[in-house]
Image (tube, rainbow, N blue to C red; front, side, top):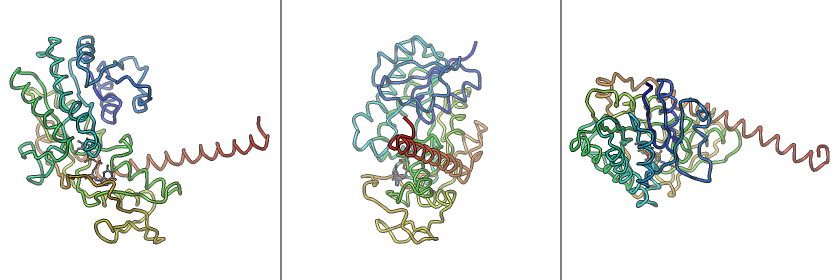
Amino acid sequence: MAKKALITGVTGQDGSYLSEFLLDKGYEVYGMIRRSSVDYRERIAHLEGRENFHLRYGDLGDSMSLVAVIAQVRPDEIYNLAAQSHVQVSFDAPEFTADIDATGVLRVLEAVRNCGLADTCRIYQASTSELYGKVEEVPQNEDTPFHPYSPYAVAKQYGYWIVREYREAYNMFCCSGILFNHESERRGETFVTRKITLAASRIAQGKQDKLYLGNLSSLRDWGYAKDYVECMWLILQQDKPQDYVIASGVQHSVREFCELAFHYAGIELEFKGEGMDEKGIDKATGKVLVEVSPDFYRPTDVVNLFGDPSKAKRELGWNPQSTTFEELVKIMVDHDMAKVAVERAEEHIRLNLEEYLEKGVVK
Ligand code: G4F
């Protein structure tokens, strides 16, 4: 019989890649989605209708819906990827963030126990490098002390500890993957990488004048999300439940990401000035294309994330460099250059059609 996996957060970047990965492995995949009148299923549209891919309504904020879905599906594995995942947003919506990212994890664990699946169902919890926050050592590994530095990270820390607690108290097979930043062409458009690759593509094609960013010196360990979902699965296939750091082991600044993204979009940028006065200038034309705005600064910002994936390499046999930083940026820019080109073509067709309609050429 095919294994059954339930994925919360299936409509997100990681949920869509994980669904594809598990379907390829022969799993029966159940994705949990929230009821909404807005269509947010773009990333899984290509999977809907596939024989082994099913959607169920449920919400991390609603225990009854979780119990209902888990009781009906009786999954062998749960991947809890659903979250309010934007760090900056967590400063504006701290209570909602705590409800979903902290209590939501507890609700999943309790639902599994209430459905009598504590001994059979393995649970993966999407944890985060944001737990290291105001970092106490560089690079960070599984033993580095946590210092969460945003409402998001504080909520995620509860999620991490409640998973450990259920592992120790009830002997459940539940684990956290402490994932460092992982990006892709499916990344949400308000996260810094995608914001940059889209803007570079629009600026290169004359559809945007300037890009406004926050802290350009912030350092991140960026990897390719498609590679990271394999680790989520590997973590649940081990003999013993354990937590793992998943990272590329390479660090770059937001500024460096920006320079490379613009380079792949055909623009050589050079940064001049400091702090709020720093600007990214097109070397060829002298035009200012990137500026700093206080709107994108956070009350407390995490500025030095750098993961040590040695344990994942050793124990999971995972290669953190199967997609390099340069390849990641190129994948994202190539995708967004094509996306913007299609949007321009559509706009061109629409304008022509409007003109023809106006002139009565077509009716
Ligand atoms: O892309 P970001 O918004 O990602 P952040 O805050 O690192 O969080 C992401 O990765 C975590 C894993 O470590 C996840 F847990 C979390 O759910 C999320 O997926 O920001 C990255 C850095 C920050 O230091 C931010 O201050 O980029 C800096 N930044 C500079 N300008 C900006 C901007 N971030 C955003 N979103 N927008 C800007 O204009």
